[in-house]
Image 1 (cartoon, rainbow, N blue to C red):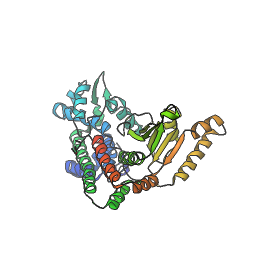
Image 2 (tube, rainbow, N blue to C red):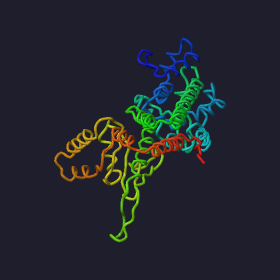
Image 3 (spheres, rainbow, N blue to C red):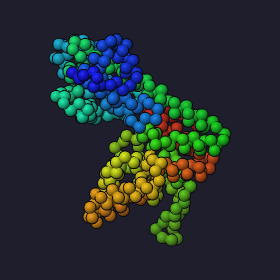
Image 4 (cartoon, rainbow, N blue to C red):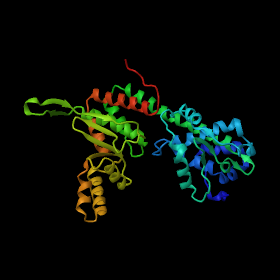
Length: 368
């Protein structure tokens, strides 16, 4: 058991639920429950402007088990100890039906939750989720504090988190609709640029930056052909490779017909840039970075980091230097937005709306 003074409840809504369920004992319960602490620390995404990912896969993996546990084994520890686990498909179908869960896979059940849980609490001996040949259950150590079954409180916390997330997600949709109704295009451009903050949620930044770049590049003409006489005029087309959490091998956007790769990232770990380059076998990448730092400074810092890693090895230095095609920051995205026509600005807003709804598994509004 941890000392209560050593723990701090992060989320206000978690504190309120604990006080409601346990009154004066809430701090002791929280301080003794690693599951409540884990959930509390995973729910920062409810805050406006949070950079934190929603962690729905991990949270829903836990919630799916707890959901069925409530009716079958709540406050029945001796009976539960004989239980072999819930079938994967039963859990899978349940959490895919939850808000934002339709695209989730089984990685959290199989390994991610336990790996992250152990990283947060390295001294614990038991995994949070027990995998038993395609069946899953939560270790009884984390369902009880003394004789108190805390699973219902955990469910309340998760359900409130989902409610707050849904409200936050729909707020952007409402804001986009307000922007689309504006008649002053200078104000529309200004509001788009305001969304491109350094504190923007990662998936929001990726969607907005894609929408801007798509409409910026579509005005650029190139000429392709196998001979001078067969040259044909084409406009650059940018494609999004998938959802923001997809395992895309380091490619967030691709361009036709010139074949450029784009990776969205932030200035926090230059080693990740090199990792992205390695994933695509050192094919040149354009980095779209969530920063207002000048691209010249970012490039200088990145090249200095490469030189440090290479330690004079020419083959390593050239491999990574040659793989940096271009650096694009918030500054360029804002500049290019302000250069676009009114029709292109409207197109940006439509694209943000479409891809955001796809990301959040919302219904897409058909303008037709």
